[in-house]
Amino acid sequence: MKKITASWLVVIMLFFAVASSLTAASSPPAVGGPLPEIKLPIPKDSAEKKYLDLGFFGFGTFKIPEIKAKVVIIEIFSMYCPYCQREAPNVNQLYAKIEQDPAIKGKIKIIGIGAGNTSYEVGTFKNKYNVPFPLFADSDYVIHKVVGEVRTPYFIGVKINPDGTNRVIYSKLGALGSVDDFLSTFIKLSDLQ
Amino acid sequence: MKKNSWHFRFVLLTGISLLIFVYAPASQAAFGLSDAFKNNIYNPGLLKPTDSVLKLKVGDRAPNFTLKAVSGDTVSLKQYRGKKNVVISFVPAAWTPVCSDQWPGYNIVKDIFDKHDAILLGISVDNIPTLFSWTNQMGNLWFPVLSDFWPHGKVASLYGVLRADGVAERAVFVIDKKGIIRFIDVHDINKRPPLEDLVKELEKLK
Image (tube, rainbow over all chains, first blue to last red; front, side, top):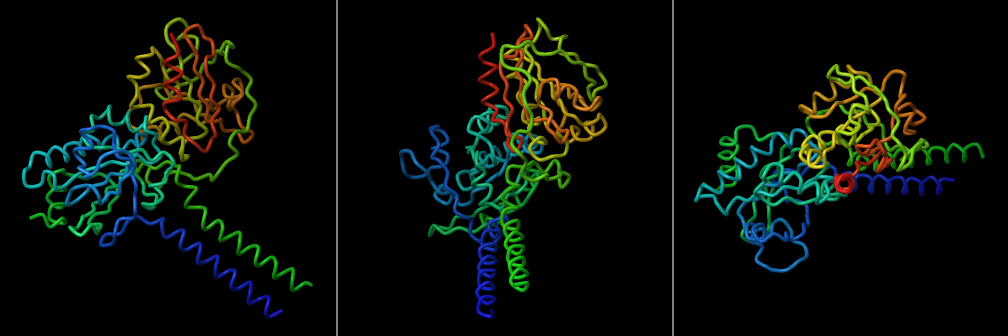
């Protein structure tokens, strides 16, 4: 009888181990840690390809730290999210300010990932708000699960080190607030000044 | 024997609770993600995909109805006859996950509806005050939101999309200017219908 009890205890403990490993992915990327691996399709659009400057041609996928930049800002959004809709002009403004400043242009890049959005829906959002940076579809919520099923909009900043490693420097739910303040805070966090 | 059966129950209960623990976060993924709703979305869990029997089919004349809108207006289907194509979007309930982001999505594609000379009517079985509070979180909606609250779910029932528990299906009907039903999608209640499916149907209308 004792033997049976012990074996059940082992089974229960294994259950706990599996449960905790699965729920570990349910927290957003922590500042200081690495970005979880996210694979995205290489954009077909040549301007978007040029912007990301992936350093290789063709089709297939790429990983976010392969983007040629010092820092990548990732916006987790949804076409269906009213806050993301309201925030779109601010994120566009952030992009414009980065592109207009020679000190940071090319060093900070922005991408968006549409949680639960099909390519068509992401395209609809892009057209509606004239989003100038690349947006990617995550129709089956695969990436959304990897980043801890965050509410939207959610912004993640990742610093890409010269050796290819990376570190999350920003991970926060909600609107950017003042675009100027956000950008100056972000530049400080990025050690770009 | 008695000891064994307790043992079995204990293991079973532990197993079940662990499974809930593991799968609960995953099941929230497809739900109302927008921070606009904060923590005010009630999570009903995974529901039976559909739970009603359609009473209409493509080619049928769409039955007329008259309902009160959140704006205070009264809207009848027949007022669009000969003037506009009509898309009816039944959603199950206010303050629930998928519904809370379906209409905000439609809200940014008025141009697509305009292009196809179509109006959207959003219908829910909730009462007007609930719909008022809920749709306020979505921003200003360009389309009428109609309450099918009393007699409860009368229109949903007329169209065969009232579920056994009194909420509507997540269903889309496309009705042309002659009042004929051209498309019906009684969607899995747990999932949001992709926008492109509706757009494809609108493109078929002349």
